[in-house]
Length: 311
Image (cartoon, rainbow, N blue to C red; front, top):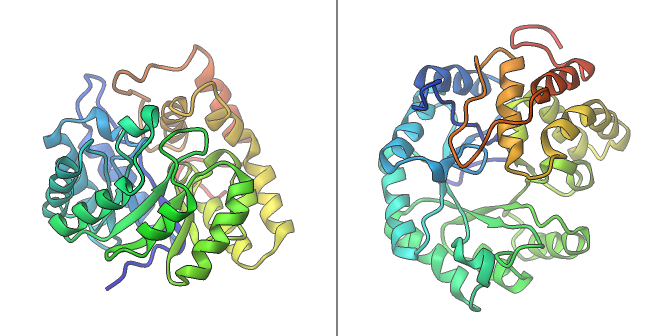
């Protein structure tokens, strides 16, 4: 049965204790809260927001299992598949299945970020992962300013492969978006198209089936409303939500590096009462002094309160 991710799909952070170990009690709080929100269709773990590549193999599997238990298996857990080579990634996906993952978000081989890829190579990555694991897969389109972004022909060929049922698109080039998303729709009407443009969601909201975003950690209620406005082609409603969220967006995602957004997400979850602190794992570093107060003020200006408080 094809998974239905049409809606909000948060990519939760991985909480750590102050001594740097995975905080499974906090995973229970975060996962159970996100999973309880109507309109949340899955949780995607071990991605960039989840510091997935900073975890040991045992930790990765434990995190998959912990989030699955936190949602009581009511919604699927999607695992980021990040291993460098096809064989490595395929075995990673097979382990993810055993740990309770229902789908895989396939990252490009990280060497491609610097050197690019040979024509046809990304297609073999998806085929090998699916053949080994049987895990339903999500095509991940990287930003246009990396060498790991896929041209349209590559996307179309991957989308047509057995096992690929959705795409997470973060091309961050609207000229390409307005050309390639309609082409994917025309070729594969059942392909679920999910935006991951955390820092400027509004322009993509009217062309997608949902969102797969780290932003879903901190403001899931408003993002569910934003998706509904996009589906209804209600620009005024979508724009009003965008403007309400803009102070948060700026303080989380308009930073020097997108990776800093992960640290800011954790401060957002501190504000919402889910986490007690914003501990991250190196090479991530704490934000500059005062950033926490700025983030808290942004949440307050957006009217986003602690969990359990009416917004």
